[in-house]
Image 1: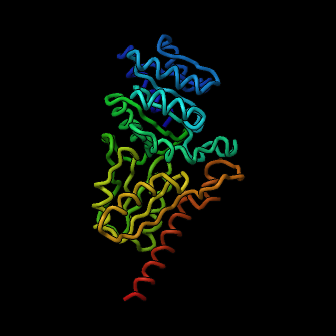
Image 2: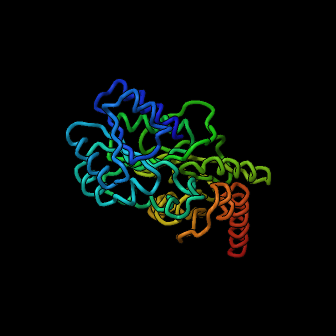
Image 3: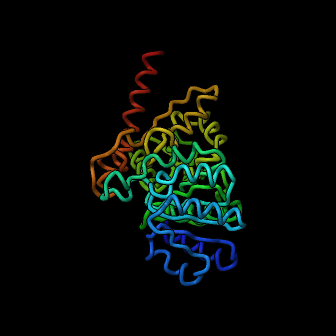
Length: 316
């Protein structure tokens, strides 16, 4: 995802002299090409994320189109006041880009776990929030951000995410994307790089005789409420999967839509517990530890379905 993002950003910068990239003293292997090709449009703000956000707002208010970049928590939580007051309040054309969403930097400990970022960015007025699921979705979301501008937040995986779409996709702001078939019993809704485990879990469910469809939500704000309401009338249950706290992310967004709808479709939220993790390890290890790997997702969905169906038979 990271490399796909920088490739697209450089292509845009070559034709737009107002596009500026600011980093917080990292990512040099990824940003080298951009800095070499457009040195006048590249700034290293140093390990000073608050200043980076304020600088970005100033450049944007002077006519620039700015992307800030750092690891997960640092361009968001560390400079939340500057994002809120300088960028969002002034509707500045700034996109805050975070690499390594969720547990991608898991071995570095909880200071590098981005597990509340989506909730906090969703709460900021006027902030578009995006978490694409694979490199094709990165292309689609970046195209929208370049056309529509900020304030915006873009959460990327780290590296090595596999391609899940068979071709290019279109994801205008506020839309979601179906993957595979439709008309199943349950719909697995996913946001961000955990889309790979979600698709694998759907395959495991199908192998167990449960018809599972998948829909990716690369945008959390604006949110595709229409797709959720429609799915609530078509599926036995909706399942949300996210590498994020269970508070404030995709599961909460879907719950908000369902709460304002007339139906009673069950919602199963699969996410991280709202606690600080003292467990360290690589991303796959931590996903398994928190039951976010494909096997665990499949098992949790089966257990919930069996419980719900058993309860329904008792009510009848």
